Image (cartoon, rainbow over all chains, first blue to last red; front, side):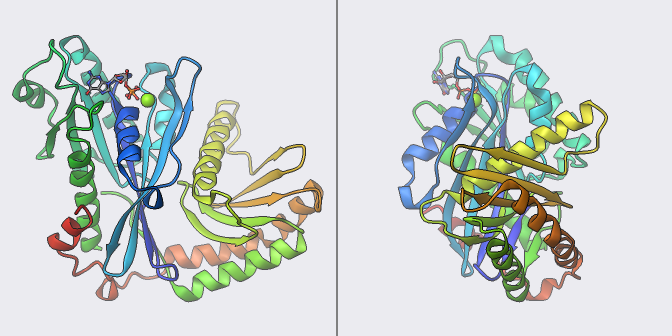
Length: 194
Length: 157
Ligand SMILES: Nc1nc2c(ncn2[C@@H]2O[C@H](COP(=O)(O)OP(=O)(O)O)[C@@H](O)[C@H]2O)c(=O)[nH]1
Ligand SMILES: [Mg+2]
C-alpha cells in the first residue's frame, strides 16, 4: 500500500515480481541492485534455501528520485516460484501496489507460466485485489535462449489486459529497467487519481 | 485497484515520534519503531547508527506474516507478540491493528520490561493510527494530483 509521509516527504510503494520458479525474478532484482548507485538503494535481502531457491522473498528498497518534492521509494519483492510455497506467496502480495509477471520464454516452461499466472490471479483475489485494475507489466524473459516461443505468441497466450509487454534478458540486464519503469509509471499514475 | 494510500501528516508524525521516544525511555531500549504490516517504516526513534531500519522493517513484517500464517493453521487468529532474544541484542514485536511496534533492546533492558511498556502504549498508538487511516481524504491538496508524465519520466533519466 502506498504510504505518503508529509513529514519526511517520502512516498513508499510496493512492487512484487511474480512468476514460475527459475524464470528470473531474483535475477531482475540482482541486476537492478548492481546497476544502481549505492546511495539510491538498500541491501538486497534474499531469504533463500541452501540450493539457492528463493524461500520466502527477496527484498530491495530503491530510491528513484524526487517527484513534486517527495522522495519516491519503491520496495521491490520477489516471491518463491515453487508450487509448495503458496502460503508465502499470498503473504507477500499483501499491500501490493504493482505487479510484474516474469514469464520464462522457453517452450518447456509454458505450462509453468500459465499455472503461475492463474495462481497470481487467485492469490490477488484472495487478498481482495483484481489483476485487471492493478498496475501490471508482463515481462517475457530469457529471450537469449534457443528454444523459445516467439514473443507475439507468448504475449497472446499470457496477456490479460492492455498491460505493457517487455522482452528481457534479465541475466544481462536487457529490459530490466524498462520493466521497472513501466510498472512504476502506472503506480505513480494511480496516485494522481488519489 | 491497490488499497487507498495512507497519508501521514506532519503533526501526526511528530505525535507518533513523541510516543515512541517516551516508550524508548521507559523501556531503556536502543531503538523503537513503528512499521506498517506490509513492511513500510512509519516512524523510528533511538540509536539508529548504521542499523538498516528499512530491511529490518521488511523482515519484521515478513516474520509477523509468517507466524500469523502458522497461527491460522493451528486455529488462532494471530500471535499478538513475538520476541527473539539474542546473546546481547533482542527484538520484541507487538501487532497493533495494522501496525507493528518493534523494540530493539540490549542488556540495559529486559524482555519483561519491554513487554510491559509496549503493552502500555499500544492502545494509544492504535487510536492514533485509527485517526490517520480514517482521516477524510482531501485530494485537492495532494501533491500528486498534478503529477505529469514528464515528472514520472524524469525519475528514470
Ligand atoms: N539465459 C538466461 N538465463 C537467465 C535469464 N534470467 C535468469 N536466468 C537464469 O535462470 C536461473 C534462475 O533465475 P532466478 O532469478 O534465480 O529465478 P527465480 O526463481 O525466478 O528467482 C539463474 O541461473 C539465472 O542466471 C535470462 O534472461 N537468460
Ligand atoms: Mg528467486
